[in-house]
Image 1 (tube, rainbow, N blue to C red):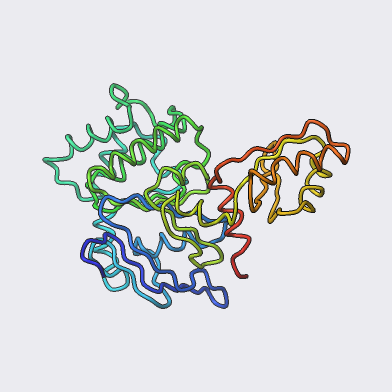
Image 2: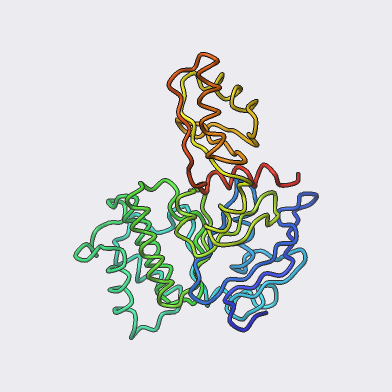
Length: 311
């Protein structure tokens, strides 16, 4: 285990009967680093987080969190971490302050420090002056920020967030990520799983997992550059189905797929192939098509890397 690592995972395996949920996963998360875990549903993200929180025992391999072995000292691990799931976990029939005091007791926050910690959590959630409001009256974004405040009442050094913004509107998600970055700046290490491609861009590094295997690890920029073998064109044209077939058959095209209202096309040279594709579409009755070079998105990288991963 590296001395500066807040989380170290070494060859982690988890099997449920004949099903392998994690297959030899290894990585590290540094102090104050925000690591995003990205992958399709069923890829193994939640299983990994449950192991690192000391809630599941690994079948093989080892993992350390905040300097403790998750298999031999799960209780010690749980005392040093914060955890927040995609499903809102606070009590709707209690007020904001009552929830925070309850969780402060569970986390063992000293009585003399509790008032100050509750006030901090209310400030983090942006709920100053609403401490007596029932949680059931809060909008989804406020609830998630309140849950984050509750998860860090005991000032953990490592924070696990399992798809924390699922079902939250985009503006609330962006504000939530501002809070995560504030925590990282204070030295808290954060491992967050998400299925939102734009959220992956907010992380210092990304680990892409598929079918229990780690298939990519690096900064968002590095992963996007490495995943697309060539240059990327956005092609806008009518009759998508026919245009896609025509583009796929064009010289120099390595890959083409529908992305929203355009086609994303990987080519050997954007400068050369863009005009060729426009001319080819026009010659086959699709007028007004345009092809322009763009930078790959995380979604481009995700689709390509998951598609290339061995079954």
